[in-house]
Image (cartoon, rainbow over all chains, first blue to last red; front, side, top):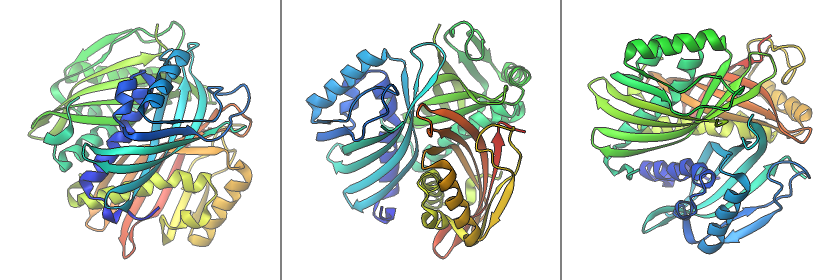
Length: 149
Length: 149
Length: 149
């Protein structure tokens, strides 16, 4: 990742707010809000299989464009009953040019569906971020998960 | 939450430091330090019951003003023996005007009293934040907890 | 910790990026990358014993200078098999002068070596940070752990 020399301070703080809003929008099932984080052609992909019987149980998959991203959140809401929590931490961002950036962060996903909390998964999220007329948006989010299959 | 257009960069970084100090002040039992985060009429409230037999076991309650907030931290210190840890993440802030802001964040509360760590609770914290002559301070903090009762 | 009045905004954001990169460099076994966080005489120390049979099992120890820090990461990589995760949160920084700062943060260390994740340790990290010709660097990192011995 290049140094962040090309990203102004305001740019960096705005990008950090995209990361800060991500978990709550997924967890609360706010599909419309989730879309506001992405460009119209934005995508999310789970890139690796997880260990059988662990975490969400969901296979690798990619979702591109607002219709597919909307369905992603709606499906997760049904499965998780509003009781999974995604906490994004260790957010590092760098410029790829004046209007493009890359970010990487960790995510801890905890599961409270059965009462007492359980560690569900750990994720490494990688983001491609672009400046649009409406502000900075994710163009691509990939998630690499533990426990790995 | 409105966009953060009215909050200067220095304001946002200062507010983020209020969130960053919160957990350690509670965990270490530093009641006097905890008060420095709040306005004189500041309040903290646990807004929902948690599942019986989980987490802190503490019922919904509100604490307003420095004397009650001091007692809150002192009581938690006795119960938690300095071995609970509050980690605040996913901090999003926005302006409500030049001297008022709102913030929301997640908190993961882990319990190390019995040796091996346990997930105790997950929280969604919502903060009303105001500019004072001494800097930004929390006027109101509410905490919604999981496992939910 | 003094107020951050002496640290410019750019300084603070750059220092925060040191914290943001820390966990991934350790977890991925990128010893050379880890060294870029430190001054040439930089040090890391685990300051307290942990409870027998918990966490990493590693005793208190100090590592000073790049050769020892390199060996630290290499040894951890062997033990952890790339399946421990360090998440640093609640990062608070303050100036000790124009070219010196102090930081403190929490770390949650989770262990995914056996499949389902486990809470391994909680850490309080304290950093001495100095401005160098190459940018801000850690001069000293200490880690106080739970479960405490």
